[in-house]
Length: 327
Image (cartoon, rainbow, N blue to C red; front, side, top):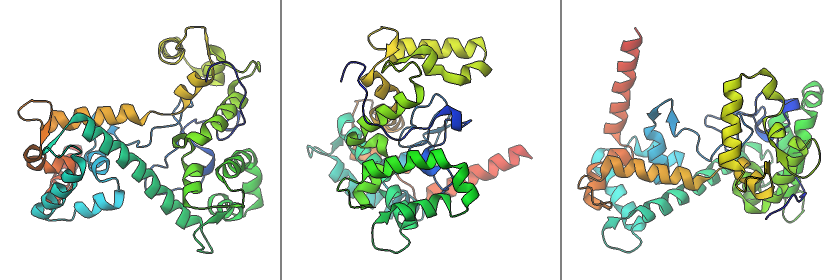
C-alpha cells in the first residue's frame, strides 16, 4: 500500500477541535470504569488495545491476568477464588495454550494466546458498550441510540460536539457493513475499535489525511505531523518528535509519511505489546532458564498469570503499605 493515495475516511479527531489527542470521537463524553479502547496518545496515534500495561515504571498485575484470561470479568472472578481452585483452572487453560501437547508453553504459544486474549478483551468491552447503548434491548443499536447514549439530548451539548458527532456518524456508517442502519455485535466492534478491524483501515487513513494533510499532497510531512502543538513546545520536544518521525515512522526516508507509514503511526501494534508481555512472564516464571515454561513453573507462579484470594490479599497489603508510606 505505497504512494500518496487518498482513501475514503473515518475516525480521527482534529487538533483544532480538541486540546488533547487522548480523546476519541465516540467516547468523548461516555465514561466507563475501564479505558475505552481507541483513545489517542499525545502524538495523535490510537492507543494500544490495553492501556494499563504499566503505571509509571510499575508493571500492573491486572494486565498479566487479563492477558491470560482474555476477560476483565473472568480476571475479577479469579481474584475471589481459593488458591487451589485458581491453580486448577489455570491448569485447564494451559492444556489449551499448549498447541503441540508437550506440557511446555513455548514463547510462540504464549504470544498467540495473549493476542487471542487481546481480541477477546476488545469484544467483551464492545459488547458491554453495546448493551449500554441498546435502549430497546433488541441486540443491535441504531445511530439514534448511540447519539443519545454518548451525547445526550441537550441541544447545546449537541451543538458543541457537532464536529465530533460528524466523525462519529462516519464511523457508524462505515462499520454498518450491511447498510441496514443498525450495528450488530460484530459491526459494533468495528465502530468501537476501528483500529483493530482491517476493513476500517482505509477509512482511518483518509481521516488522518483530512486532519493533518494541510497542503493536500496526500502525505504527511514533519510540520504536518507535529501540527499546532509545536507552537507551545520546547526544542527538546521537537527533537524527540523529529527523531521519532525520521527513524520510527518514515521507513523509506523520503521526509514524508505515505499511506502504510501513516497507518504504522496511527494504528497500534498489539504484536509489540504481546512480545513485551511474553518477555515479562518468562522473566518472572522461567526458573530453569531453558526459554520455555513447564506447566509446573507456571503453576508455581500462578499468581503472576491469574489472580486468587492470595493475590487479592497481597494487593490489599500493598495498598496498606502505600497508604502508610504516604502518611
